[in-house]
Length: 148
Image (cartoon, rainbow, N blue to C red; front, side):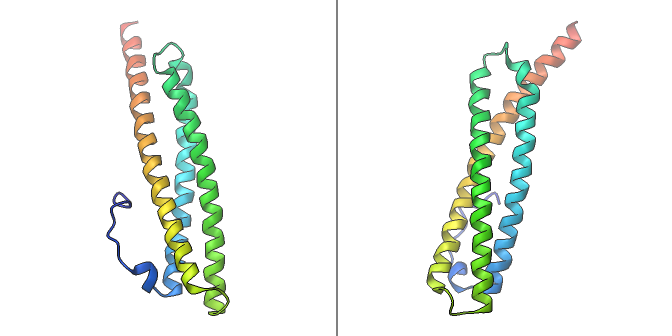
């Protein structure tokens, strides 16, 4: 998923069979569940080392990251809901090909795909920042213990 934003613009979303889009959407849903679990881990990491940051200049930065994690968690929940609804639409379209406007479903898929790409890119940026700050705190803790 590293190149999600830069993936080539092809016509897969517009040419794929409904079953293929359904399978792809199931994978997207599964990926979102993974990110949701990862967000829980990151929030725990921030919470666990938050006390270590109270005497640190990075306190405000860590508070902002914790808020962003909360916002990302909400966004992930919304994307999961949208993905579940899209899966329902695809399943209904597979069962009854003329129930929905196929062009609209493909646009829905493309929009969902773009929203997930945006979410993943923001998630990765924040994860990197959290790890960098946490690493600093852990190094300071190790140095404190070694000098004590």
